[in-house]
Amino acid sequence: MKKEKHISRNEQYNIYVESKIPKTKSFPTLIWAFLVGGLICMIGQGISDGLMALFPNMGQEEASAWVSVILIFIASLLTGLGWYDRIGVFAGAGSIVPITGFSNSITSPAVEFKKEGIIFGLCVKMFTVAGPVIVCGLVISFLTGLIYLIF
Image (cartoon, helix red, strand yellow):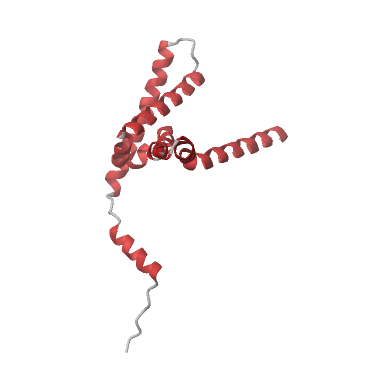
């Protein structure tokens, strides 16, 4: 007589979830992520070159700052129109890695929860993703500056 192995509810749930998760084709997904991420970066470089051509006194650092602002605006606009999510489904991580992905991660909750009001919808939900990133960035910047000051 064989002993039957008892499967816990958590294990049953994990088996169920694994059976429902769609399987992705890794290689084509990697290619599209690389191409779309590269395209976003090429657009940023094109904006930078265009700004420096239009404004001859603009340096590389100032152009880079403007490129960040413009790319964040474009990604937020595309998110608000519902187009950035379509790009994300198609491109995967290629749309998440550049600064546009961070813009999308802030704008998406703001758009989704706007019906809850300005304070509890827009303001609170907008920083659920961005808050920890901003805090970590500030703390690491402070510690780096402190180390630089001491040494």
